[in-house]
Length: 220
Image (cartoon, rainbow, N blue to C red; front, side):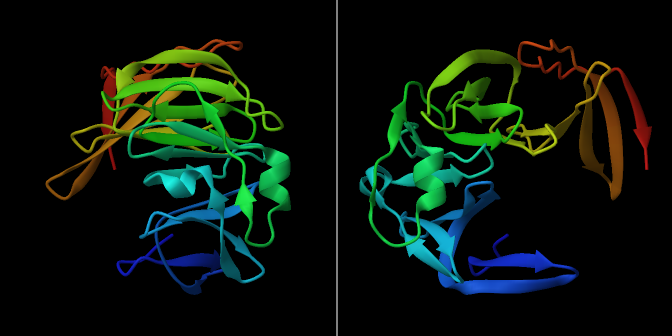
């Protein structure tokens, strides 16, 4: 996480520890290590206690964010919504400053998030939600699916849970399991947190479909 001064921290037990003096606007951690985008739009990897500059394709473009949550690969998007991927072998072996070779992926996204087991999710400039599989060793993409619903940001975790944020600040969460996925919507209302349940349809071989219509509600 980063604080209000853009310094990165990691949690060990119940204590937060500062990760160097580099100021960052985005940090991502996963099988590929810890990667981030600095305020000057440079991409860095955290190696042996310090952030190492990752020169290459993305350095010459303004960055929005990078994601290290995939199965070893690193995926980044730019302010013009171009998508770039760093192969897993390159990402894991990166230890000292050198020029990296990024693979450009067809399409356009303004935010992307990957899971090591359950593929990658992204949103584009018109808030469309997409799901796809990325092969870590080649950065090849397959199974691109347009998902029902609109969002400005999407995040997925190692357990396959997916969170989306709408333009109105509403947060939806999908929960994976053997039964049909369930979507929960959290919204603050006059100091209370209300939770509305939404059903998600899914297929074992295709991407889940987000249905953002309310079925029932509960409060806590």
